[in-house]
Length: 260
Image 1 (cartoon, rainbow, N blue to C red):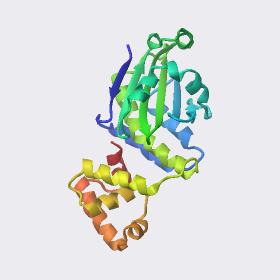
Image 2 (image 1 turned 90 degrees about the vertical axis):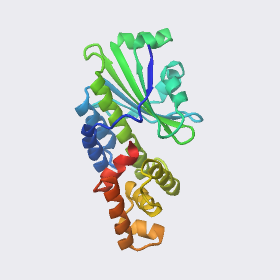
Image 3 (image 1 turned 180 degrees about the vertical axis):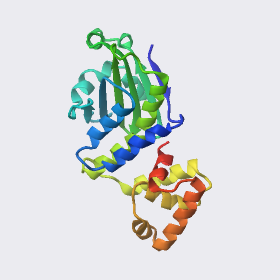
Image 4 (image 1 turned 135 degrees about the vertical axis):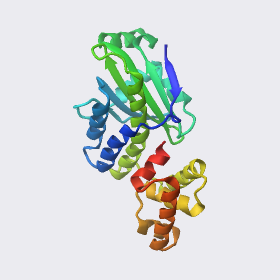
């Protein structure tokens, strides 16, 4: 039976912070996706990994990856199999960008016989997908697969995978901007983060939210000062107060708060 759950309110496992830090170091580099795959494999053994993006209006794209193998286009899966896949139900169920849905599927849950038979012949026992909305029409999905030689995922492994995806999926957004795959509307992104800080940490003042939103996406102290029309020393003062309220000590720790 298909199991679809919303997991964005689950706690982030502390062990998932280490791969997050490793991925931050690879932002904008050609080893980013390889590091993504390696970090996941170091935490939970998977027999296959797919990382796919798509849009409701254009042909979905991006990447399928497997540990130890290069990135390859995922359009074939998206165009030929997705319409009859339970994953499409999860994509249709996403309502906002803060939501992350988890879908657990076994081969017997696939209605189309040819598709189901392909999974069964490959020895697939379980496939787990994590889906997040991108903008108004887009989505991103990470799917991990276990074959019969490995057995299904345990509940602890499921928690680790959910933490991994929730922390690292936003880093993919940043990586794609840095390598020129997408153009970032910085003002919209900052406004979104300011609203997120306001909802989740109402003790922050307006200025503290403004500073935190900019720090979370990597804007320097000098850049914040220019953006807000205040001096660098004022930025440092507001940032210090905000960090004290939030119990963090670095932009890295700050970023983890708005990704939860």
